[in-house]
Structures are given as structure tokens and as C-alpha cells.
Image (tube, rainbow, N blue to C red; front, side, top):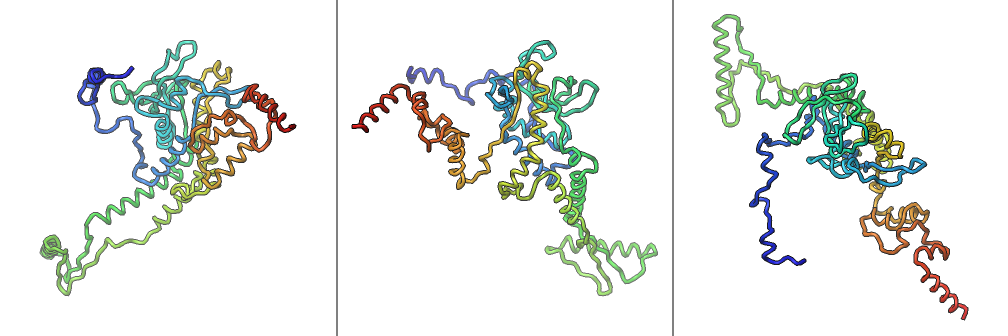
Length: 419
């Protein structure tokens, strides 16, 4: 139905001119200039180079494809399940976060606190009642208190716009502990030692950049009596006045006076210790400087994904599988698995050879390869078949693809060749 001018004017809606009926519900709660559910790192992590390490790993974990799926009899991926849980894992975790932002939130909170809780907020039914339930939205929560069978978590409530503390059973929420806890979160771990050294370095920089001159004036007389002390104090004030009142900070002294400046750089091995701890931390986390600045080759990235990203992703999906899938669902071969796109590390110069090998060995179809390089799928039926185009296929395969019309073409072609 074509919209006329009258219909368009009647149904027109503008965000700023028309009233939003949902917006009235927000007037009952306090607003905020800053996003209240954003991750805020603690323990001085936000002031150091540790933040860049945390963020790099969190981004790489969030780039994985995690889905709620069904497995075949051999435990292999068969198909994705259209469920609320799969919608949270692949599209939207809650009203504020997409799935990738949600994963990044989980990993950053886990690194910072050592352990994080993933709380299902909205479900299709009461999880305490018997029967299956589906998860609609979920959020990360900070664990405040531990009990034998439950925990108290601080979770952001998007209904009222602030965080609340609630006590939930451990069987209801996913509790994800940092697999690198002994390296990152232990009081005397490599990361904590590096943070303390960086705090010391920052304090020294602040002192040196505070604007103080830190001068010692040696007067040509002994300052012991009260009169001499008053004279020395007066001399100090005179020099301060000269420096503050001068355009270029220049003062004069008597030829018998000697001035010593104390804020000259003191030689210490603090920077060497920081470089040593940083190198040690990179080695223990399986990261190199090339990974951080994006110049790592394929072998380095594979090692990084195998030693660092894979353990974190495995713990994440295993806990989701254990808490969010019932025993009946696991018996029905439901699972939560993650995938990594191996073609992200392949340069364009090698893509043609890989595409030929995958299609020739019937691992990927032509349309699947076209999806990898960002091209539309071909409408040719052969593009969806696992077949080697370099080998002539049997007439039975062609019959399945094109029907009986293809057999007639073959017969006509054969008759013409005989003639």
C-alpha cells in the first residue's frame, strides 16, 4: 500500500517533538551523568599499563563466537538453538549491553576482582520451580559475601538505575574464577608487584613535577642563636620573593652563600625492575609486545590464543553449560561452545590458496568461502555442495542438483557426439 502525503503526516513521529510514553517511567528515579553499569577497575589498575593488558585480552575473548547449540551423536556441532539464552550469547545480553560488550564486561571484572558472577535477571519462569526455564537477560555482578550454598552479589538493576545487593544460590548463577588468579590477583603475584612499582614511579614523578625547587642555602655564619635563625629565615623569604616576583625565576645571592639543589634525578633501579616485571608478566600470561601493538605474526597469535584466550573462554562456556543448562537439556545433547574464526589471521595473498585447498578437499563449500571474504552467496546450486570442481562428478550427483532435465541434456550431447 502506497503511503499518501496525508497518511505520512498523520503517522509521522519525531523523537524530539513527540512524547515518548516510556520516558515518563524514568522520571521517578535519579539520573546520572556517567553510565552507572560501566566497569570501574579498582586496586590502582586504571592508573597503570595493566589496563591495556586487561582490555586486550577482554577484546580478544569477546571476538569469539559463543552460542547455545545442539550436538550430534558424536559430540560435534550440529545446529544452533533458537532460545533466549542463545539471544543473550549472540546478540543482546541486556538492555544496555550487546553480547560482545557483555563478554568484555565479564573478563574485565574477572581480572580486576579475581572472581565474577553472571546473574540471570529475567527468565521465562521461576528457576526454583521444577521444569525448564529460559534466560532472557543476564548481567555481571560483584561477589560481596560468600556462603556455603549461596553468595551475595552486587548487580545493576536497570529498572531503578542503580546497583543492588541480593543473595542468590550458587546453583542459579555462574561463578567464573580467573584462571590466572595466582598471576594477577594474589597479594604478592607478579601483577600486584608491578602495580606497586608503578605507583612508586608515579609518586616520584609527581614529586619531581610539583614545581618545588628543594634548595638548601648555606649561609656564611653559624645558625645556632635565635637572632641568627631569624636572619636565616629572613634571607630565605627574600630569595623566595625574588624567584616568585621574577619573570624568568632568577634570583641573586651573596658571593659567600652556597646553594645546593636537591631535586636532581636520583639514580635507582626502579625502572629496570618495572621492565623486568613487565617482561615476566608478559611471559606468564602468554603475551608478547608484538601482540599488544598488533605486529605479531601468525605463529605468535596462535600461541597467544592457545595459551591465554582458550583457557578463559573454556572456563566461561563450561560454567555457562553447568549452571544454565539443566541435566535434561544436556541429555538432549544441548551445549554451549565457542568458535574462533581462523581466517582473521590469514593475509589476502594466501586467501586464494586456502580457498582452493578447502573447496578441493571438500571441507568448505564455495558459498561458505564467499562468506569469509565478505561476498554474497552464489545462487548456483553447486555453490552449496561439498564437491571438488576439478573432478567430473557422476550423473547421479548432477541429477540430484538439476533433476531430469540434465539427463536429457547429457543424452542429447551424447547423440550429437556419435553423429
